[in-house]
Length: 249
Ligand SMILES: Nc1ncnc2c1ncn2[C@@H]1O[C@H](COP(=O)(O)OP(=O)(O)OP(=O)(O)O)[C@@H](O)[C@H]1O
Ligand SMILES: [Mg+2]
Image (cartoon, rainbow, N blue to C red; front, side, top):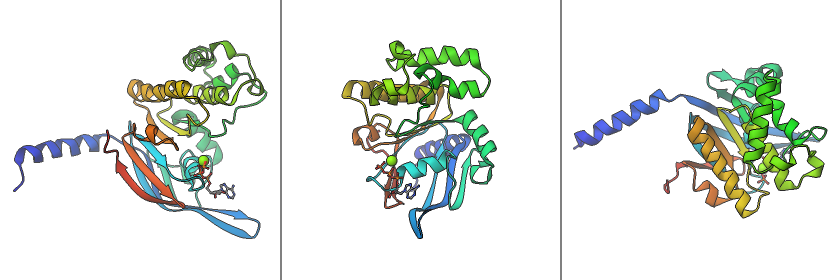
């Protein structure tokens, strides 16, 4: 027989869950790349939803489609089939300009290969998202504060070519945080960092989640990092092989 106390608690949890909105919904997504005359199917049958405030790790072997999936979810590329909603907007149906507007408003992205603008200093790179929204004064303040927080207060005027890999990674992180995104995609955010710096950067992600309720979707090879998240999605050969709450949390 059902325990009435437990049933009550469960229904309370269910109600709370219903009150939280899905910030990302991926439905029947596949992605095929054309390479010469060949077609390479990189993702298939991808389905999952993410609720506001969740911290989710995406793990899987090299080449399993993690970066491709993140790019699709952030509207940087379009799926071959399926739909991707950020809140109630189907980004797979939007024009490039409309997608850029959604990205500016909601999304931060930390790229595996940084993608900093080589002709801008670290400081200017970090300001870009807020500058695009016309908030120049705020952009200057946030850029300074964030570069300090990632330990690069003394490297602000350096250009990307004058920074080490790990330093560029941290500039990329500061840039992604600049407009307080509701949804942050981080592709191997600690991949190029030494233990101490990696730990600081990791902490910064979790702080952002606590302070601002930022939803975090983190791709990582580092299972120690993945184990600190609330849910782990495993990819293999372009398919989700498991999607489970993290038992260690
Ligand atoms: N533009 C492209 N054209 C053709 N194939 C591509 C393209 N981009 C990615 N691929 C292929 O898609 C597969 C998945 O690549 P992806 O970068 O998503 O993997 P990943 O899981 O992020 O790997 P890693 O852990 O090494 O970063 C790879 O086999 C890659 O060669
Ligand atoms: Mg990748």
